[in-house]
Structure formats: C-alpha cells, structure tokens
Image (tube, rainbow, N blue to C red; front, side, top):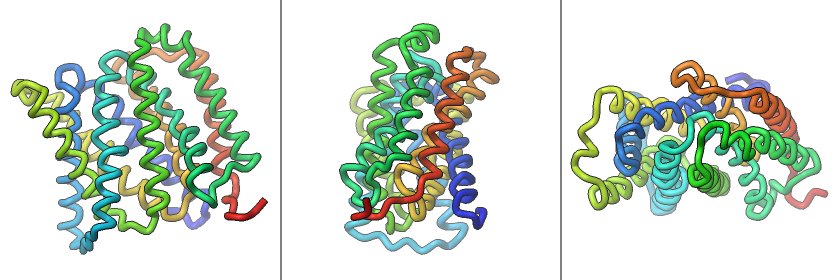
Length: 299
C-alpha cells in the first residue's frame, strides 16, 4: 500500500469496498434458490477454508488465546452469520444495489457508537458534518421514492438497516481490540460464523437446501473468498492504523460497486436521484476520512 497515510487509507477503502460490494450480487444470485441459513453456512465454510489455505501456504503461525476466542465469537456473530442471514432474507425482497445503498448507513451508526464507546473517536465538527452530509446522501438513495421505485418492500429495507447496525457493532468492537492478530481473528470469525448458521440450517431448513445448481455454488464460492475472507483480512489490517469512523467509510463506497454490478449483470436501474445521492455520499466520505483523529481529552 502507498506510504502516504491518506492514499494508503483510500487504497484499503477501494479494495475492501470492491470485495464487499460484489457480495450483494452474489447473495442475490444465491438467494434465488438457496435458503438464508444455508447461504450463511456456505459463505462461512468457504471463507474459513480460504483463510486456512492462506495460513498453510504462508506458514503463518497462529497463537489463539481465550481473549482472541472471544473476539472471534463476537465478530462471528455481528460481522458474520447474523448479517449474512438477514441480508440473504432481505435480498429476496429488494435489489442488490438498493440493499447496498441502505447498508451505506453503517458508517453513520459506527460514528455514533464510536462517539459513545471510544474515547479517542468523539465526533468533531468536521466528522459530524461528514456524517450529516452522508446521511443526506443516504436519504436520497433510500428514501420512500427510491424504495418504491425499485420495487422493494418495507421489510426488506428494515432488515438491511439491522444488517448495518450489526456490522457497526462489529466494527466498533474490533476497533477496541485493534491489537488482535488479523489472520487468526478472521479464521476464527468465519468458523464461529459457520457453526451457528449450520446448526440453524439443519434445524429449520430441508435437506434440499443443499441441492443447488452450479451458478449458486459459484456464487457461494465468490462470497466466501472475494466478498468475505480477502476483504475482512484487509479490513482488520486497516483498523490497525485507521479510526473506526474512517474505516467504516467503506460502507459509503460499497453501493457504487454494487450498483455498477447490478446494472451490468442483473439489469437493475439507478435513477438520477440515486446518482445525485452517490455524489453527496462521496462528499461525506471525503469529510470523514480526511478529518484528523481526535485524541482523548482534546477539545
């Protein structure tokens, strides 16, 4: 990554948002026939296998401890099976681009949670302005007209808001544990994400849930590697040098990738209002990510 701190941050944001943004398309494809718990199980299993292969190939030494196991369990829930299941249910009812646009509210929730729980990340005037600007852009993107125009349902929108809140909790929690070893944490997170989802799938979904066409399994493979394992490792590495509010700005960029893929692959339509909202959101991203970190006790 670039040596300049701002360029380094933007490099991470673009790579991570591209990976996570592509996940909306893959979930949409998988959710066409695969139930949500099975999707979450497959995504966690593939991602865990991908990280394990990386560990073996690089001979990376893992040093798990009880504290790290707690990190894995918390992230496996709030950044793992819970949002995976909720998003799979939601995207049966709304488009991939719209789902990503709603999830762009994650940085706003992170900023508010960080203000409460992280002493060195109180809202400054500049960051507060960025949050408000981003909120205005999100309103343009996911206002009532946008939801109805995209043929979505209110329930699908509410579920995606809960997805955003879940990821925000995971982001702020991991920011408090920023010294955790990224590769080991991601591997454990995916295992803790897979196991509860598998238990729920076995309990509530029929055996036919696993009888899927090749396209669905390719989508699950992409979800596990491209949209989970790789961006999550990069995200935890970014949290080692970036503030939680800055790191969560990846949520502002994901809708751009998701919208582009939705238009090109699924034939989804994005209107002028959504385009205007994207410009406003990017302005908010710039305000948040370019603001200097505020130290604890500073005014």
